[in-house]
Amino acid sequence: GVPVSLVGRVGDDESGSFLLSALRSERADVGGTLRLGRTGTAVHIVTKDDSRKFNVTCLEANGELDRTDVQRAVALVRQKESGERRVVVLLQLEVSPVLSRQLVKKVGERCLVALKPSPLASDESKRQATAAARPRNPRALALTRRRTLQARLLLDERVDLCFVAESEALQLLDDEGGEETLICTLSQAALARTDLVFVSPHLHALPRGAHP
Image (cartoon, rainbow, N blue to C red):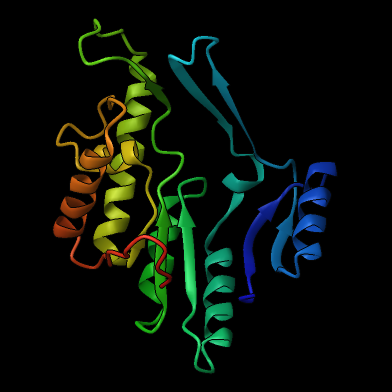
């Protein structure tokens, strides 16, 4: 397999020990991971009829990342860049997007930057297009819009690969900044993928089954 390293923070607790042990068993390098406080958690709640989904995220140790973590990540990238293989830096939205943008600016052009913009929606509804709109929590909507803006800023910085679900692709293209998205069809997802690559020229479009 491909060598994998993790730079970040987990809690100094049972959950943190479990996560690090699981990663070590898969031969992942966790030397760049610090331990403090409690491990971050995410709870996914789905209503009985599968009509609404809620994501409740508690950052805990994830929220404690700072510039020293960026420096460790940059040093690790520099170390891994020697050789023929390109280094892939995978980012997501569970840590500070400000720090992620700092990291993107510091890594070299030989490095491939990938983004998984999750969690993006804090509250997503499944409904038929003909169904009456359901009211949304204003705070949840504001959080979704903020996360969508943060993901867009990362895409504009220099992201080469963006791994998105169908609804996430549509949400990133939403001019309103993250309004609730209907569950889309495969054809809509394909169009959203094309449009996302068009508006973000750094992105690479990969055919199904391809590898970067």
